[in-house]
Amino acid sequence: MLAKRPYLAALFLVALGLVFGATLVSGFGSWKGMSVAFGASDIALGGALPNLPDDQAISGLNGSFVAISKAVQPTIVQIDVKTEAPKTAKNDNSQNNPFKRFFNFGDGGDDQGGGDMPFFQMPQQPQGPEEGIGSGVIVTSDGYILTNNHVVKDAAKKGGVRVQMTDKRVFDAQVIGTDPTTDLAVIKIDATGLPVAALGNSDEIEVGQIVLAVGNPMGLESTVTEGIISSKGRAINLSDESTRAKNGANYAISNFIQTDAAINPGNSGGGLFNIHGEVIGINAAIESGTGTWIGYGFAIPINMAKSVVTDLIKSGKVNRGYIGVTIGQVDQTLADAMGLDRPRGVLVDKVQPGQAGEAAGLKNNDVILSVDGHEVDQSNQLQSIIGMHHAGDKVMLHVWRDGKEFDKTVTLKAREDIDDKAAVNTETEEKPEETSAKSTATLDNIGLTVRTVTDADKDKFHVTNGVMITNEAMASESMDRGLPRNTVITEAAHHKVKSAGDFEDIINANKGKAVGLTIVDDKGDSHFFAIKVPND
Image (cartoon, rainbow, N blue to C red; front, side):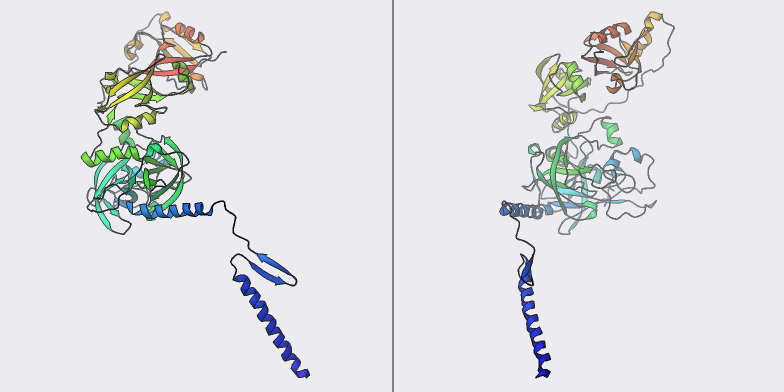
């Protein structure tokens, strides 16, 4: 009998183990939690599903992102680019390269190579063409693809551009045309029946709207990122040195959509899509000190791209219309000097002779308030609206001048290249003149020192009256407003300036007010400035 006790104990332990095992299995079988028995109490691990307000809405949103991604990915291609000529060591001017702030290509920035930075960086070699990767949007079923100018502008003429589809087909591509002013380009592959992206209306976008960026960042094919529109109408300068030299130092059509959807090198030329699967922008740039995404990127509005791509497909170039004016921003001080109720509109700094603006009767110091009923408060807004028109188109400008508002119809003209004129004689030989002709005045309240113009000044600056700005005090109103030294003030507060003493009287008579100044540079060009005269 005693000998059987160990066997009974063993059987009891086995039975106890089976019961405990069944308890564990039943606990693991419930995905909502697990109960473990310890004596008289249980410990429950895990909890119930969270009580969400509308589970169907969340599932629907997730499903929408998936559906949009599947639908639009085939319309975005990868563009592989080889440069025409071998590249050598870094250019000494690379630090001045405007693209350096945006996408780095190798060691020199985008405008030193074809396309964006490749995924793997090999040591630079002194021989052989460089390679880069960008993206493109298929805009016609027979092979026209929209991308960025900086992706393909340095591509070799033969075999320099290749296109890879999402189904792994590869095509050689031809560059049809480029538009450096908007950083857009069109290429063409020999194919039919291609999936085509739906093009939306970028004028209808709103800040906070959900967007998807699709492209090939860092060589990672067909990548989708999600974010929102962070801002609209951003002005960033992507034009390179040659573009600025041709179009003017400050001219570029820049009206970018800002987004926090991740955009990286290789995304250039890809699509920014809304939740309806429509392209609303062409991804173009990031602003980054590292060359990679740090929180926001920029896309070219698709409405601007539509007019460019149509022209490039038809003729290989853009038949863009111009008013023929140089323009500037209107801030609070300038608005006060102009008599505007608030800072609004775009200042006409100079009307170019023989151009559309002069023919329509625009004048220096006019303020353009709207174009065809669309208000413009930034220079880039005006440039973008006009840039979507062709030479010969008519636009209606609503203008502010001398306290009055009126309309002007302008027939746009094509931009004409302006040849450099012979340099203005800068000799400053001065004969001894009477002391009265060199009277000076120092206005501490605005930080400016002036002297009455001499006969030599009048000849050099092509003026009949005024005072020369000879000095500006540091951290003064004049320096803050950017008044250029060694230029001539001919008018102040709508009065001709006859001498330094006359100018001082005008300034002192306008304490506490904003005063408009007409300033002439050494080329004879006049510009409008405004300063705020302190009460003290």
